[in-house]
Length: 211
Image 1 (spheres, rainbow, N blue to C red):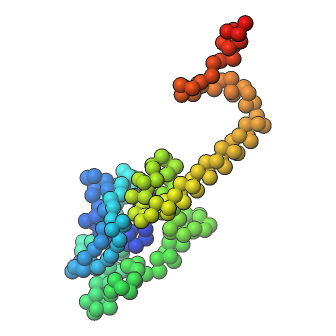
Image 2 (image 1 turned 90 degrees about the vertical axis):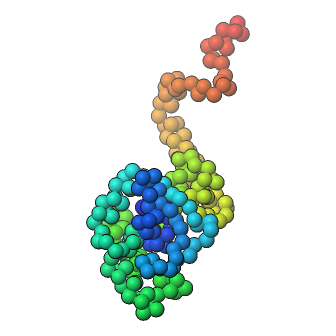
């Protein structure tokens, strides 16, 4: 979910099924009011946004929803933990000011999943960074990524653009160096035209017109 949407951990943990629009394949990041079934959760205005869901992710969410018992409105909070939080709330021991995580030992659980996946190191926030970098690499503008990421400042988004640009430059350099060691001239003669309207005349034609 985070890898596809770039959502922060707190945003994911406070996502309810009402935030999921299966028909339009989107998820809304929005604050929550203190109600019988949901606890209060605040976010900044810039964090309010609608994010796209992929077809594969929608399928996984449908399967996940079908496997969940009724009564738990939260997508990623296990039912046992949800019931425990509801007990805290009834006793007046749960407050948004305490900044308690809806899921206890979150990092511990994430690290176990990471190890099972064969990934040696990394944090949960790396999934968000990867998503934003992928958006930039796929051609989304800085402004578009800023709005989707919920960044308050464009300077924050620019860091992802610069990181992707550096990666492209490094890969281009490696490709150029590799081409020097192979039959690059033969490949050049078979290369297609750029068709950008600013082409130079072919060498053969140029020679013919100067004779």
